[in-house]
Image (cartoon, rainbow, N blue to C red):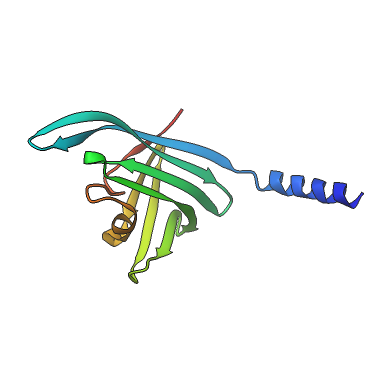
Length: 135
């Protein structure tokens, strides 16, 4: 009987902490360079977000020219009305990635490019991308 009570309590807790899952996409052409030639390739970048009460859990995948990419997943907390991801890096710097959501669009601000240097290839970065909510 105790098992059933614990199970019901867990189910109730999960419902009280219900979350919303969002997916943002960005369609753009990237350039593939090879020796003296280049060609454009269609690409779709994706950001998945699970919103909870005081934070979001996210997964960012960005592909840039010549297949350089950014990959970052984690949890961002609400700070002054914006979600911010913070991670102390091995080099002593702090990656601070701010999420800017306006209407159905999402963009990022990578303060001092510390996140870029830690989680992206040479020609990729988090800034200068505009994602739209997938409907």
